[in-house]
Amino acid sequence: MLMAGAAVLVLAVIVAFVVFRAKEKPQAGSDIPLDILAANASQLSNNNYALDGTVIDRFPRGESELISFLYRDASGREYIIPISVSAEARNGLNINRDQQYRIEFRVEDITPKVRGVCVATSIQPK
Image (cartoon, rainbow, N blue to C red; front, top):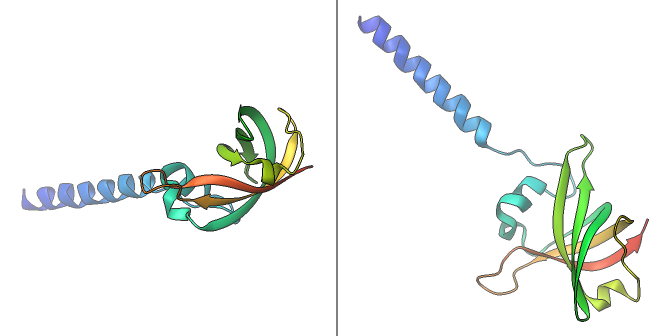
């Protein structure tokens, strides 16, 4: 009886370990850890990144706009990244939906409560 109880306990520990490890998200890609960006972007604050992808939507707000940027990693997994693009970063470029661009951006803390915002530093058509 004691042996059966010990075996069940060991099995429960192994199952708990496997379930815990399955919830951890590995870093995706070498340029930007996209899983961390999705889960807790403020961990990436004050870092610069560059991605090639497609603008799938845009939300103009005066001189600036927010874009939804679709990025596909090497395995084909898709990520939609919201990026703020100022007039300065756009530098006269007309940004169009369904067009491919290379965007360089910085993850910034805007205020103590608004952290981990992707802010474009440049955008170029591909």
